[in-house]
Structures are given as structure tokens and as C-alpha cells.
Image (cartoon, rainbow, N blue to C red; front, side, top):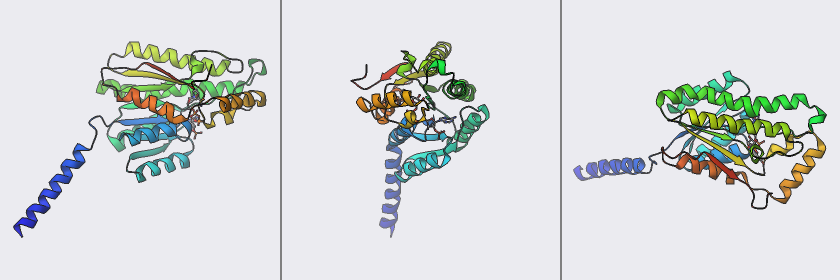
Length: 265
Ligand code: NDP
């Protein structure tokens, strides 16, 4: 009787030791905007697989919820929330939900983006404004929502997904490039001002996602889709680059990463 009681106690203690030792010492709470498809979805899955706790946000609630359920079914930790990055209130609620569920925030990935390409002379002003609102103002909202908390805890990591279009300009992409150049500029400014925060810009090249479906100008859409068909990388390639930046020691700040297809110009 005594022996079996001891064995039971030992087994319980052993399983506790095993479960504690299997937790990575640097398990983080990672918020991802635009996690309902493409790079955001791939990043959520990749980071969850690496044992991080992920919080997925996007407007398509059904999609982020399905991805979070998938992650949890595979043994990961995930939370899904409706998020519209163009609203500061929505972004703040997203951050608040993450704090309540996981007790804090270590990393914010500002990934949500849109790319309705067109020639400047076509004056697609509603689309210009949408790109500014999502790609630039959305990133600023993300920064504004987490910065007070990160300053208080004197640590944190902000990762902004820019683009090769933050490094070069092409016809039909003037406004998209302008938003992505701006994201690089503000990231560099934030980095210089933040001695305790890490700031990373990840700039993907052509990546096989839904981004191109949102181009309403037919000529630009066909040209972009044909480029993707010729050379593109899967979103998981970008997710791994993001994972690399997160996995570095706290005193190592990976500031810029460009990941593009080997064959892309
Ligand atoms: P997707 O279209 O697959 O993903 C874009 C994501 O942004 C979706 O999850 C979408 O979710 C979300 N999103 C759009 N508007 C909003 C909003 N107002 N609020 C919250 N979320 C929003 O494209 P990608 O995965 O390719 O794009 C991810 C990032 O990568 C973007 O910033 C893009 O500019 C950048 N990038 C992509 C490249 C590529 O070749 N694919 C190349 C270079 C950069 P929902 O609609 O559900 O809200």
C-alpha cells in the first residue's frame, strides 16, 4: 500500500518535472495582426509550434478562430480576436484581451496590410486612403497600443512587416511603396529612441498569399499575379525569418531582414 502510494507520488512529481522541463525558457506572448491568412497565419502557426503563445487578430473573425482552434488542437496556445487595425480602440481592445488571457505581451507583429496597386494618374483615392489607413496608420496604432506597457515592463519586441517595396519603387506601386517606406522610417526612429525595446523590420519579396486578389485594376493585378507565378516563396519562409528575430537573445536586436525568392529581381 505504502509502496504504491509512493510510486503514485513519484510518478506525479516526475510528470511535473517533465512538463516543466519541456517548457522553453523563452516562451513568449506574441500578438499578430492580419493573422487570418498568408504571412500572418503562417507566422501564428510557426510560432505556436515553437511553443509561443499567440494572439491572432483580423477582421475575418471566423478565420482567426478556426486557425486558433487548429493550433490548440495540435497542443499549442492561441487566442483569436476580431481586429480592425484602422481603429485605435479596436487595437487597444486586442492588446487588452491578450493581457487578460496571458498576463502580458512580449512581441507585437504589425503584419496586416493591403496592396490595391494602380497608376497614380488613375486617382484611386479611396484605395490610397485604405493603404495609408491599414499599412501605415494600422502600424502606428499597434505601436501606440503596446508602447506604454512595454516601456513599463522595460522590454518588448515590435516587428513591422514592410516589403521589398520599402526599398524600391515600381510603377503602379507608388502609394503602396510610400506606406512601406514610411513603416521602415518610423521603425528606425522607434529603434533609435528605444534602448530597452527591440524593433525589427521584416521585408518580404513576392510571397504566395491572397494579397494580390485585392488589386482591382485589372492590368496591375494580372502583372502582379504573373510575377508571383514566375517566382515566389511560401508564407512559411517569412514566418521563419520572424521566428529567427524573436529567438535571438534579449540583447540582440535583428533590425532588418529581407526575404525574397532567389529568382526575384
Ligand atoms: P494576405 O492578404 O494573405 O493577408 C493580409 C492580412 O491583413 C489578412 O489577414 C487581412 O485580414 C489583414 N487585414 C487587412 N486589413 C485589415 C484591417 N483593417 N484590420 C486588420 N487586419 C487587416 O497578404 P499577406 O500575407 O501577403 O500580407 C501580409 C503582409 O505582408 C502585408 O503587410 C503585406 O503588405 C506584406 N507583404 C506581402 C508580400 C507578398 O508578396 N505577399 C510582399 C511584401 C510584403 P482580414 O481581411 O481578415 O482583416
